[in-house]
Image (cartoon, rainbow, N blue to C red):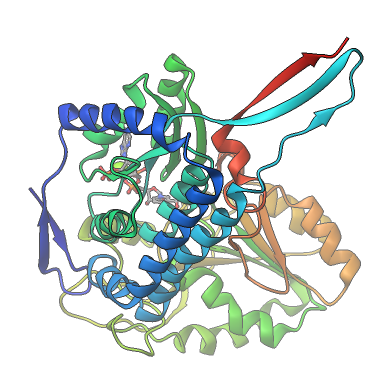
Length: 450
Ligand code: NAP
Ligand code: MG
């Protein structure tokens, strides 16, 4: 049994039995059997079952949200939105089941058509930072495309995933089509990667584990979608609405206590407005409400664990902290939002993913330098650009080597638009109109008519 702690208090709230390698292999075997039935389900029926699953999630939003506040320290407002996101993603891909079209290709002597065949068993490995949405971005399109799913939540945050597994069964999703298997990465996750019956791995988490999964998946030629780290830039040009840029910058990085692969953790500000921007940023950072995440007005909760808090704190050793916001003291894994002025672009705090409520602010002199600084990273996941010049906004958005950019906004992930990383931020795209393609093989069939 593994204890699940409430990160706001450090108290144990549940104990969850983890799967063994053997029980994981059994589950994969059942998923492989269920695949034969699920892929043969009529498209309209499969779509309706996913809509029923969405309705069950909708009816359970408050319960799921309370579980996420308790196990992950998410603010109640965010947690409700995350549960609603699972519902919306299910409905979006339910609409895709009957619209996942193939092609008819002009050829001589017959007709040529393509089919989108499901892969088989898909293994989804989920981190602790957004337990519900990240699970749904994988399982909804995978199930819609006709695959069966085994899903491993993070050991720190298994409760909402377990509940989603129950809701699927209550909604009528056939037995073994969607199985949630709590347990350790080194046991359950490793058993997914090792098993030749698993056709694809969808992994979100650290770049180091992602590399290992990619290497091991090669042995059985598994397909992979990897969503890994980020070190995204928030570029503020002198001609931007500075008040708006400064007021929103804290929420672009400190949301979910900075435990977000899309966190805009490097603010790059044009030299001529650098001091003014910092003046505006300070009250905005101090205004972030860091408090008990079950409070309706909470804007930031604790970090996920004592170990992670220590890791984030280590980044603050010996750096120049310009100012901080507030955080509760006492029990729980709290850290005040912190703004750092780095001494050098090679500082660890500039180059490595902190995954906590810490942001650096650096200056640039011209557009080309801003883009070069944004791209001076092994990562390329998201980013923001603030300017009133539309041409410059587009040039910068085209110039930054990242998968999801926003101009005059910090919007990153919408279920209807593609999401994923350049460079070491990952491989493949989730969400958007094309996600079901990455859960199918394209088959080409030629039928002679002559
Ligand atoms: P992690 O080790 O990559 O864990 C992510 C998931 O992978 C968890 O479910 C984990 O299981 C599982 N896992 C671990 N080792 C595995 C293996 N050998 N085979 C298969 N699955 C395995 O990430 P973490 O330790 O939680 O966080 C470390 C750092 O990763 C963070 O500080 C952050 O920088 C980054 N991170 C990024 C994201 C993101 O959204 N891109 C999310 C989380 C973390 P268990 O943990 O249950 O054992
Ligand atoms: Mg780990």
